[in-house]
Image 1 (cartoon, rainbow, N blue to C red):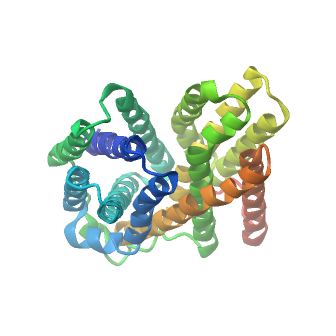
Image 2: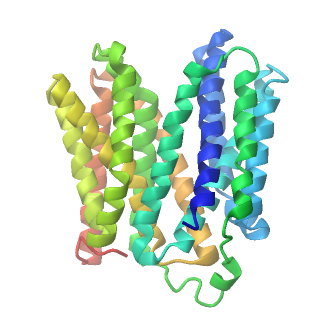
Length: 378
């Protein structure tokens, strides 16, 4: 119950920011901008996220979680409004980089807050609720494209207003006490180096996977002559990812996070193999269910695993490192998958199969090197 104000803040901020991500691309396309320019503006946001991962922990330590979130919300609101003042490409690039920085800091603040107040043995469930709220808000925000006129300033004003409203729930949020947690025992819950490495690689894989699915799955479906059902399959993919969040969190807390990583890997691999071998609608829906349920739960599981029982500033720093690796994956995944999609008819599915195969080998290697049961939680 004490995290409800934080989740309300996350909902409003995601509604505004995620809607703006799509709105920017749609507006540039309506203005006749070339695809390369649209892609450049889109990449500027993620470049900002990557840049902010170098200083997010210091900013949060200096300002505190609440004031950092307020600053990020207002920055996103102003950056959205400023897009209506000019159409110059360099200015738009700067504004999107700035928005990406604010979004990255807010992600680090919210995720470290959720992990910091949750008991260590319930962190997977806490991250599952966080991801459920995020994906639900992200999905709803995309409906605004059909409801709100994309021409003119209405959409930008709506996105800005939602980001400003996100500040209000923080007035009732229970602030995490980092000073109490940041003392002598702040690093006592730090997991072994091999476990942290496993979590970091897992976040990298999750970024590559989700970045490729978001960017290229519509194109892959068009190549499979399913262009008329892109919305259906994409919605089903995200819905299945949302539906498995809470069961995944509970199972990870009960049976161990590494066990669930192995299960997620099998689900993703099985889903891609079904897509590779079968083309019936029933098989496609089952494959997308497995792909969504496994792919969209990998990030919260590996993140809670890498953080172990960390508290205070150590937890914020680890959340920042995980955001950095996830951002690297989000930038590189679509590029690699795009090159494979150009060369192979089902190149995206081949990319995902090779990616999860490498991830499975890494899981096995860590299992052999650390000599721990696969179900070890920390």
